[in-house]
Image 1 (cartoon, helix red, strand yellow):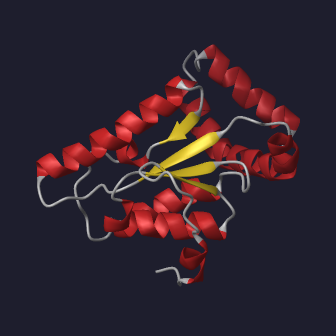
Image 2 (cartoon, rainbow, N blue to C red):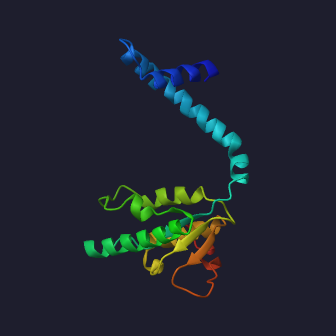
Image 3 (tube, one colour):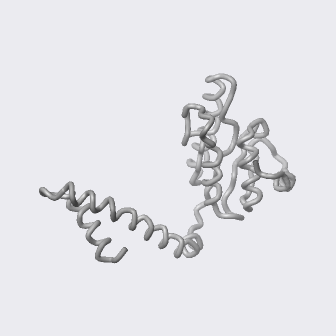
Length: 177
């Protein structure tokens, strides 16, 4: 997409698409939006290393059980993750809390929510960002998958319910599901 095309889309957006040509302009802008998204993706990839090099904001991903046999159990799991996320935010740390991202979504056999969570984890900075394992993480197949993924990708691991450091190397040896 050329600079002129980007300028035209920006001008249309700023003007609110006035006049009788509003619908035509909107359709043209939507068509151009595909090219714009491709250009944005290209620029992001081109500048990713430079952008990350100057970014020292710690990001913590909260991992732990979500599902439970009862709605009250699910609520307790969501609340535990929310409480941990809130404490981290209050400490000045940016947090990704997948429990809140999909809170009360219906269970659907065709949707792998954990795969989406792994996409979030893949965007964190190895050796810098952290996966924070909530109590009872071992009881959650999804949290175990997230931990294995995080260890393989070099993320730091923090266990909320343990004073000792746990060696996560054994998780890295297990195959991903």
